[in-house]
Amino acid sequence: MERKLRDLTRREAEAGQIARLTNTEARKLFPPLAEGLEAVYAESGARVDGHLLRNALLRAAEKHGAVMRNGKAKLSCENGRLTGVHVDDSFFPADKVILAAGAWANELLGPLGIKLPLEPQRGQIVHLKLPGENTDSWPVILPDTDHYIVSFADSRVVAGATRETGSGFDCRITAGGLHEVLQEALSAAPGLHHATVGEVRVGFRPMTKDLLPLLGHIKGTDLIAAAGFGPSGLTIGPYAGSLAASLAFGEEPGMNLEKYDPMRKM
Ligand SMILES: Cc1cc2nc3c(=O)[nH]c(=O)nc-3n(C[C@H](O)[C@H](O)[C@H](O)COP(=O)(O)OP(=O)(O)OC[C@H]3O[C@@H](n4cnc5c(N)ncnc54)[C@H](O)[C@@H]3O)c2cc1C
Image (cartoon, rainbow, N blue to C red; front, side, top):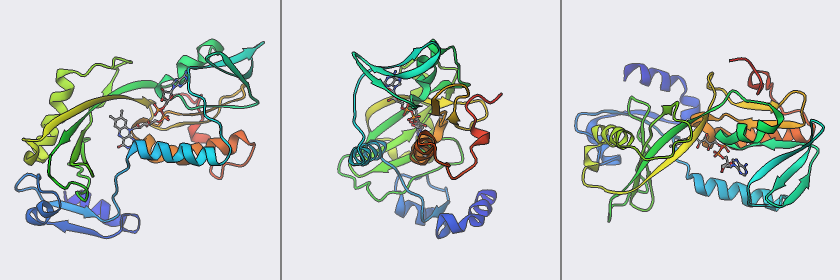
C-alpha cells in the first residue's frame, strides 16, 4: 500500500487529486468493500464501456467516409503480392490493408506464410446484478492483484478477470475460472455476496511475449499490423488505430514505432 501510494503520488499530474481514504471513507464511495481495507483514491480514474466506445468509433469512421461490411474477411494475394480483401463473396481491391483481427490475426496471415508472435489468452469475467442499488457513481476498484471491479449504471458490477495464458481459442466458461473471479471479487468486496450472477463472458486477449503491441508495416508486404494489444486494447486501441491509419496514408505517425515492429524477435 505504501509503495502504491508513493507511485501514485509521483504520477499525480496524470491522476488528478490523490487521497488516502480510511475504510469508512472508502465504503461511503463503494459500500460492498471489505471491512478493514483502506484505499487510495485517484480522482481521474474512469471506466470505459467497450460497446459504447466501439460504436462511437464506428460512427465517427462512417462520418469520415468509411464503409462498413460485416462478414468473414480473407486476404487476397496474387504472385505473393497483396491485392485486397475478400469479405464473403465481395472483393475489395486495396493498396494497403490494416490487419486488426486481434487474437485471430495469424488465421488471416496463414496463406501468406507469415506468423506474428501473438497468442490468445482467455479472460473470463462475471457480471453481477444488485437490483435496486444505484451503482452508477461507484469507483473502479483495483485490489492489490491483477483483478478489478468495475461498476456500471444499471445496478451492474463487473468482476474480472482471469488471465489464462496457453488457453488457445477454448471459449468455455470453466469452474476454475468462475471460482477465481468470484473469490477475488468477494475477498475485496464481501458486500457482493448476495449479488445475482447475471452472465459470464469469455474473451481472448491478443498477447505478445514482451507485452508490447505489434504496430507497423509487416516487412515485404503492404500489410500494416495493429494487433497484440493484450490486456490494454480498450485503452490504447483508439490511438494505435490512428497511428496505423497514418502509416496506411504514408504519413509520419508522430511517434517512433520501432520497438513495436510486428516481426521483431521475442
Ligand atoms: C476479459 C477481458 C477483460 C479486458 N479488460 C480490459 C480493460 O479493462 N482495459 C483494456 O484496455 N483492455 C481490456 N481487455 C483487452 C481488450 O479487450 C483487447 O486488448 C482488445 O479488444 C484488442 O482489440 P483488437 O481490436 O486488437 O482485437 P479484438 O477486440 O479481439 O477485435 C478483433 C475483431 O476482429 C474480428 N475478426 C477476426 N478475424 C476476422 C476475419 N477473418 N474476418 C472478419 N473479422 C475478423 C474478431 O471477430 C474481432 O471482432 C480485456 C480483454 C478481456 C478478454
